Image (cartoon, rainbow, N blue to C red; front, side, top):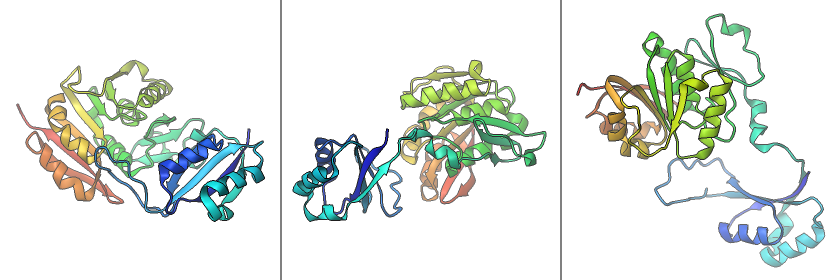
Length: 299
């Protein structure tokens, strides 16, 4: 069913009060989005910052009387309502809309991430290893530099990955765990604080024929089954630093660690947190995002 959308800049309005007002007037959904491409990369604990310029879009039932609604909005927001943009929004499966722009992508020499239902391009060749992916509502498609760097690292391991046990901290869609298995790992364990991650990881594991090799655990360490041969953590710099002792404890002597989700400017701090436990190197940087890799020191 289509909806009637009213869109406007937040300007000097208070975000929470504006949302409350729109819902009270009958909105079925209110979305706040960045109006000027200004990233919020890593807020401090307890903070929920907004962008400097915010765009508001409120969806109302299609049968809403627009003239009556505009009168009610004017009573609440004043003359600015004259500048509201109105349109009819056709109903869609919104969490799948982005897939129309998602195409097969290559990471390293062999690994290809392919959306469900799409064919592998001819250039992939006979040696290609495919990962059929449907991220659902969980983060992780390979389009973000942090995920791309991790996938490239996994592909670069070659035979070193064969038969290994992998821990994926912050597994999201399960893309790294499933990719490791497709590249030859024996088993993978995923942990994540988002319940959607468990659903997406299980579905992607089944889609790629590795469901029997994947298990999921609660996100809180220590993680059962340690020590692992490789620990992957594509999260954020702050949690990476906090989890350094736990990730070290989960990785066997001589085992590997891959860390991503950090900006280049944060690499030194993260590396310093892991150096007591791992011999660390910088694997690569793309668009300001850095991936670190390390080998667990002997115990």
